[in-house]
Image (cartoon, rainbow, N blue to C red; front, side):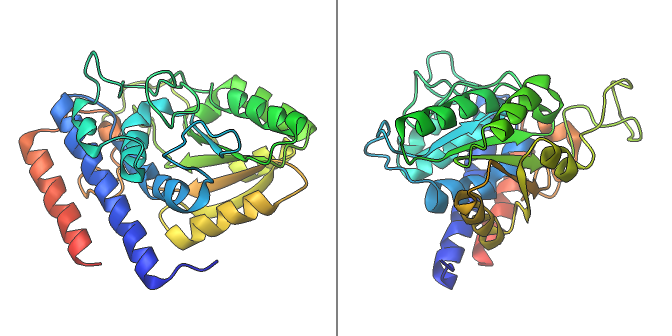
Length: 288
């Protein structure tokens, strides 16, 4: 189903609001991850407002779709999406990363409604997603499981073990989303300011790699809302096995001084940084 111009504008507005919450929350906490939540913002809004079969009033409904944020360090992006969708008050985002907060640095499923799996240690999100998809098949449940992974996730062996099993059992109720922003925490050896010369760059040729494990692959622009929603719809409709949506994104998307700068993977936000970011986001919203 095509989006109306008004609905598209509303989704773009929500993505801007999510980014605003991210930078404000990290500024308030004095620490946190920024680049990854910003690259995932548009996709998170698409998932929680258009794609996932969910109901915030009944967060534990048996046949709800499941979502796992494998790159759990981007938790503030997920929290902002959940708050905007109505799982808890937006004002609670101000407690991000505090000791007694439900909004910890990594998502915890026993603390917050709407979190389907605790995550954070890279590479460990696809395996429980695989388990959920297999359980749905055994119980003949109709829900679909989505797992968002990142560049760092894709370098962990556990991801590929899960990918192999999912392909073997042709789990057409499982969709992975690769937030391919091309950067990790320390940059690469060809960049000025590089810190770890032995660190490998993100994977090359993700399409052929995932296809080799028996996955259907769909390429999409992770910042193009209609294109990404269409990709999710195609993934849900595919019947011959699991699908991965390989989404090209920009780290730090939406704030000019953060975009494609690996130093904003995780960095405190100063008052000046916050002021500049809010001005830019406000201008983007006004231009809609």
